Image 1 (cartoon, helix red, strand yellow):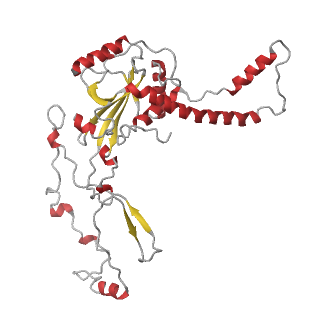
Image 2: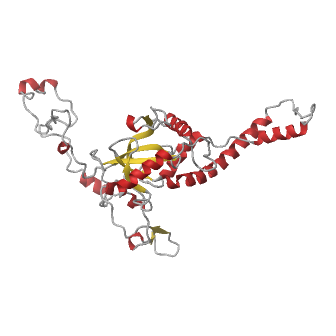
Length: 368
């Protein structure tokens, strides 16, 4: 059934017309040319993103041959999406803590997640630390009573030894011995690859970090960008679909995020966020951001207009027929501003995707 669905989507994408008119502010959709322009801006401002050409047999003719899709590799994922979920269960209960005396004027603090157990392998949970006793004058004197500043040989600690007394390594034959603590070198196989069994697994206090390769393609049918995720564990072993869904928000896993064939490869399967709602969401986000951009541009134009004409003269539409209409038209054109450019489309798009995959740091534009 899934194979039939894949074939249907491929035919539907092939028969869909290519968008020619720019409508990213009105409908949230962009043309292939605008996708390339937004990709160039993203890769220029944030070099972690690069263009890829993919499989030549899967190239789209409406995109440049060298700019088929964008990719960034090694995106960290430090924790699972379930760790961000907040419920009203008993483990997330709250309690009041009082510090100081028991009077009514004592400050009270709220402790959240009072019933939640301690998290292991976390730098924020170093474990219990015993109280360190204070040393008063008598205690410090008794603690230092047994400390001697003279070594067993009779020399005072800190005294510089005679250089002639230091044995030479060649005389003692220390160079011939082998250090047992030295790890044996890992010898690669004939093909130059190291066996996976020879790679050490992170444990103990080491934080096991998953990484993702994130790709952005252009969806011809929905006329929006589309995100693809390819995950690896700490040993660069590909993640299973069930492991990938652990890093997806519960509202989107197995619903809008599914495992599908990557369109620019003949064999690659990756997790993808379905773009059916991308246009409507991007339209709302762009409207909000565009309003703020327009206000800033109008304010900047107003401030620059005060210093433009130093002599205080103003041009009027006199001297020919239709001067009033043309003057009014010119005044209206002066009030029009460009607003948000399409170059910023993918920057806004990544911020939207970050809400779907909150633990995968796909948004490298947070400071922009």
